[in-house]
Image: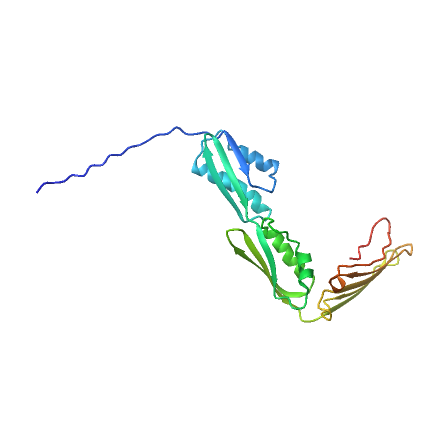
Length: 239
């Protein structure tokens, strides 16, 4: 029987290495700092390679991640010495609230302060969670994100506290300093809204008096009243 012998031919094509002459960054709404731009420009006049692209990508993402922007996509392209880095900051498409029965959605939205299509920032979401806890209206706050092609759908899952609260505080430092009295009321579910009231009096070393009365977000109107007295050019914040 005839013997068939296989033969293979290996061809190698050598191309000259291309240098990076220009680095172009597009798509970012967040301005880069001088230190980051210096780091990025340090890649100029080097041979373009996959490993270099990984280093450059790491430098850009580190800048974003340090500030809380953890959802960022980078698409590179290199041609004729020009390295194009297209950046996409994943936006928040919409924000929704789930689980509130007594607290007005408008009150919660005023605390969250997210704007449509702003880049997703994990640190800002954490601050929003802490802000909601600080109202003492909620027993449980859990943010939930859903990724789609268009961006992030952000949902805050809430469990409300089932009771109202009243606070009272009295402090005495010394005759030379001041006397302070605080009264507060929070989480009034009678109206189904966040109702807060405060009464505070402070006396100084020269019998100076600072007295104020303030309401915050009465019946979801956002109105506030107060009487302030400047003591040594320093305002006592009643709100």
